[in-house]
Length: 101
Image 1 (cartoon, rainbow, N blue to C red):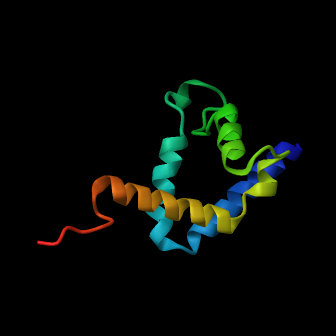
Image 2: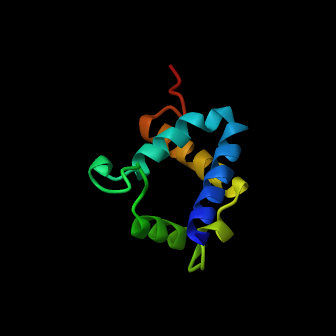
């Protein structure tokens, strides 16, 4: 029960953080798609949720060992991560630094 409440709280934090930053809506959707495992519709709970081991790995590589993602993931950190993702996407497509003609 605690894990379900924790997951719900993390989702609320994420939703509110992104809601107030319209420029991060597209990067948030892109990251949600990237985190979604292939064939998620074939396995219970039939939701596009990232694998627990992958999520644990991502949290540990960013924040170090922690008892719970809830303790390390806050709205500001999520916004910073999405800003970084947006910048990386722009760099990979060459739109971060427009070419001078």
